[in-house]
Amino acid sequence: MQKYVRVTPKKMRFIADAVRMMAPTEAVEKLPFLPKRGSEVLLKVIKSALDNAKQKGISDSDLIFKEIQISEGPRLRRGRAASRGRWHPFKRRMSHIRVVLTNKVEKSGVAAKSEEGKTSIKNSRAINKQGKKASNTKFKNKIAKVLRKRKEN
Image 1 (cartoon, one colour):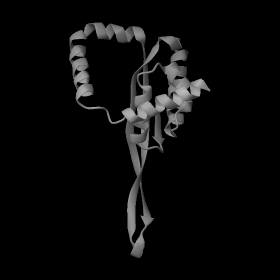
Image 2 (tube, rainbow, N blue to C red):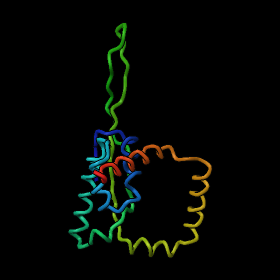
Image 3 (cartoon, rainbow, N blue to C red):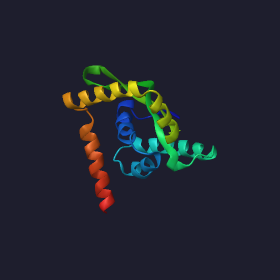
Image 4 (tube, rainbow, N blue to C red):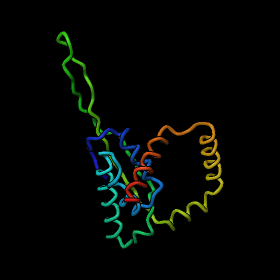
């Protein structure tokens, strides 16, 4: 967990969405190559979570992301001088990052118990994908493109 990161939550969520479906070890490999400032901070949090899991005796290959949560921290109120002696206020936002890892075995055991609930979630996701594209697909495609270029070099 990392608190009071001076990157806006909206920008951090794009990075978290790109990493969420990867394995933690894969995320550690790919995050340094993302062209975003918040990727360095998220990389440190993921590495910290992996180290904590190692201390408990869990192998890196057995881990998956259970949750990557980017919540909003406090805002700093700032302002900029404008014409005719006026003041235009704006806010500098902060993020709180929380990464939770779990075993693959535990996740599959939970999925077997609640199979009926999962099917309805899958169906609703499929409808959303057909009906409306996600707003961050362009960003994900851009990240994939950058990572492919880095891999070729």
